[in-house]
Length: 246
Ligand code: IPE
Ligand code: IPE
Ligand code: MG
Image (cartoon, rainbow, N blue to C red; front, side, top):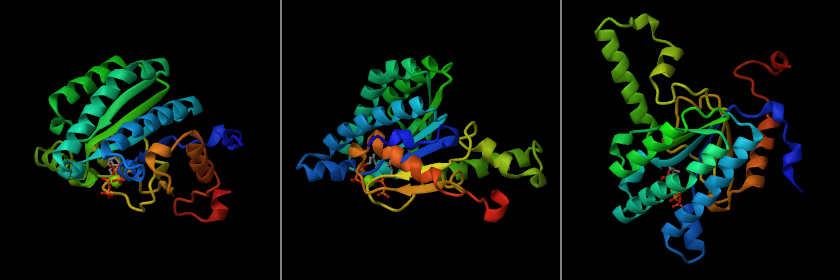
């Protein structure tokens, strides 16, 4: 059965974030090298991006590479960077034809020059697209992001640009990498791991969490629909009582 018919188009997450995990284990299961898992994972990336745009999800954020992932073997890191560059070149037309704008969060300066160049090129070419914002988290770590926020705000306080008393949620939001994005409504993690791994710690304060055992290269349209249907069945109370929500 196609689960699409069970989705309420008026109650979609405005911001969906995904921890795309399990590429390595997927490859291992088939007796392949980890690189094949990453390669295969790009097919899920493409399908999920197109499906989100078709559904009308305004913001999709994908965790593609963490600050901690730099500690993997050099060969794997190099392979991941090559796959990224190749995919950006190949999928520019997908982004254009689906009216999707590319955005990134993370410490881009740590990325190889060639990757930075390709990213800036695609960001520039898609900057006027309006249907969906696709944010790639690359060399991203939430703690590093928060450390930068603290440093930048401290500097502004020191230089009398803002007062300590004025620091609130919105000032913090304005200093995060995600400054133009709404809070995350739904966070999906594949591969059966039940952890956050340094992803969007501030931004997921009231996100609905969805964990699935499906490995990322096996995660396709119907798996996404299942996650959204689960999200739509939940009552988001934001600290209030059920009666107040109804
Ligand atoms: C996710 O898959 C991709 C990245 C973290 C870059 P993994 O490479 O973490 O795959 P597993 O978790 O080892 O199976
Ligand atoms: C999180 O996955 C990072 C990405 C999906 C890019 P990891 O595989 O790196 O996370 P841990 O090490 O299992 O927590
Ligand atoms: Mg992993």
